Image (cartoon, rainbow, N blue to C red):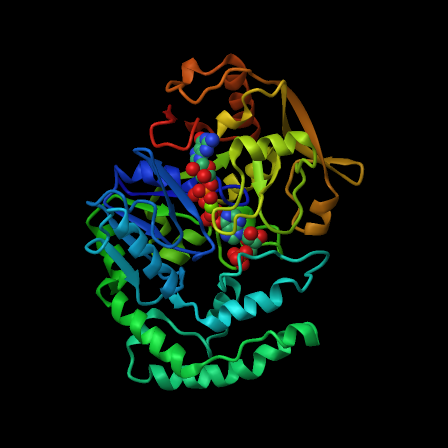
Length: 432
Ligand code: GDP
Ligand code: IMO
Ligand code: MG
């Protein structure tokens, strides 16, 4: 069986981690290929809840190789913390983790740049990043001259390179401050401490670092089963999302090949993950957002608070215009509809089937955020269901109105639904 890809089709937090953990059982290798510690993926089984940010959500199956590929930006301190938290809860990753020497490394200056640039309004509001240094690290990667890859940590000239980069960054950082008050808070990089810290991290990570591209291409030749775990969601994709309110990587389906190095011809199954409604963290337009007690109710029932930053997530109805766009963009072969249980108890449920833009009905997702900010969602109102469904394990046993809602959602998006999730735990899953 060739590769299966799991991608988020909304603005992230679609519960990709749960599905990756579930699908890993049928795979030999699981790969994270973009993003970094901005991701927060949750896996729940056996009464325990695990949060992952850089390590693939397949790590709980010891026989499966966990790979962090070239497109990821790695914060060494964050990943070492994650490894030790996993170890403390009895999850042994040592033999099964492989980190790409091509992946780029996040340094303290990236986090400082993120902090200083974050509240610079891009258009009308701040991006509201996770402050993990993601954007600045990808910016340096594309800019090349001040970028450091994992493999560079082991080169003899590493200290000298860091001294050069730090000298430049120490000049640049104060100029990013928006006013005198902020400038007074800018940290001066302690270059020798950074060198010592990163040499120490490098030593600890050494057993895991290798040539991931060769490893994965060999796995492809051997026809191994490979699972690819997307981070963020397609609407946060730097090229195809709600730019500039996006992350700095290709988090839609288009990023899988670039981030992993696995040829596109090997991808046979692309599972698009969606919530039964929509959430978003951070700034940017969100046509179906609810600013009322219905939105509050979804946030309460879905426990919609960020895994990484604990910010309350913005909540709204399912946007089938957006998901039709992202599922076609990513070549999704099917949908996995998550958190359906959160919608129990609503008298009626709205499904956004089109937008109105300047008095005209449109079916496409606008490329410009100012247009997107102006669209009005056109809703179909469907009857809700009162029953709690967290114990339902077969599709046929779902309330009739829940089935009708799923059928209409699938019809408007134009993709079949293969998985329905009715609770956070591994077993609270309906496979069709
Ligand atoms: P990810 O970033 O896409 O992996 O998603 P997150 O882990 O950030 O957020 C998804 C949240 O929903 C987590 O807290 C999950 O434990 C939880 N979750 C997953 N599936 C379900 C479900 O079907 N119902 C409910 N109520 N919670 C779920
Ligand atoms: P997972 O993998 C939801 C959002 C941030 C911000 C924007 C840019 O858990 O689904 P960044 O720090 O990446 O520069 O922030 O993207 N964002 C996410 N939102 N889920 C995520 O990851 C996210 N990763 C980044 O809130 O709006
Ligand atoms: Mg998340």
